[in-house]
Image 1 (cartoon, helix red, strand yellow):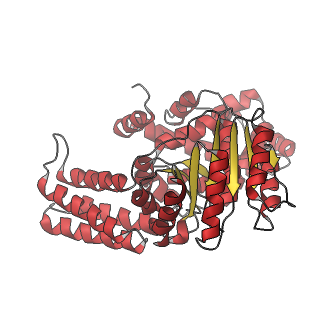
Image 2 (cartoon, helix red, strand yellow):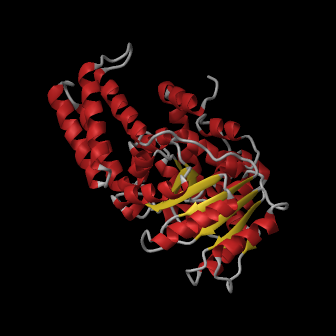
Image 3 (tube, one colour):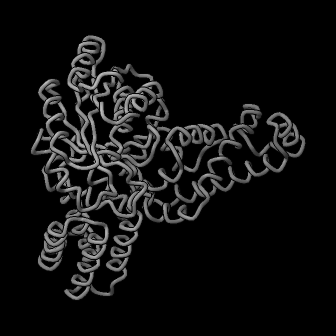
Length: 443
């Protein structure tokens, strides 16, 4: 999970507020100390931490909760608000013809991010292309070439040429009429060296890019701020991509770097696959970090997975308690297209994600695949009315799917259990209303 340790600490702090008998100055000061400790342990800039916690303490002690909100809810809302504020404003890259220059130190995930960015624009209906402007790292050409092939996008480079500016010029001429988004991968170094800065400035002058994106590894810690400032001073970066947020318990230094240079975080990378790449929204990110879920992002992933089908209708059925095996099959297809189950679980509200935390996600994902194979061997009548599936039908379905009777029985058990759970959710009017509101559906 993204920033697991920080998330657990902050969720523990919110639980302390929720369980407090009275919200007084003592509990507020205790909560503020807990937040300071959690953020400092995650490498968030000290100055930002002190500024943040002063605001939380001042607002919690002085502000009165609005009508209809309890003191506990109000303090939790203040913590949420101020955490969102330190991440700064968000923005999305425009979906239009443009040149994007990628920068960053060696080993930060810059080249991998080029491929993810190309995939992102390709899904938006544009024609991306990649240029390898890294002439110093021996494997740079082959790596970006392989990434381009996987993403099925055009690629340009010259592994025998040592002049990065020349390669970039040739690549721009090659793609200027055939591509909408040209992504230029530049050289990285182990540290901020003068020749890296100069080469970056030369490529900047040659390309005149619309966007200058800085890629930062989430594990880089407090150094992220000084790195971001050096790149910003050189070419005035327009956005930040944070990588490897799944591989570090910290990451606060990289998160706070955006605030230090005034450039927004635009994307976060949470794994090696092209799908492990998300547009960054501070409010949604903090909501997930605090265990409040991120239903909107979940629905967006569902819409992308459904490829034009009615995601809203499917989501409504999921919480209605009324669905057949056909519906469950569609839901499983949707889930399989949304990525690993552990990533989906992060987007669910705390009570749901908490229950899923200790589940064997890989085993569950394999089980869902097996269930779909079984359903492929069932008739439409059986899919519409699973109650008719008895011994003789179970035997036929198992034989047709190449599995055992017990696997078919397990599917039916899973279906009945899911149906009961969904029925319970549909019967809880308050919970259903809250979910519908987050999904922005009509009542």
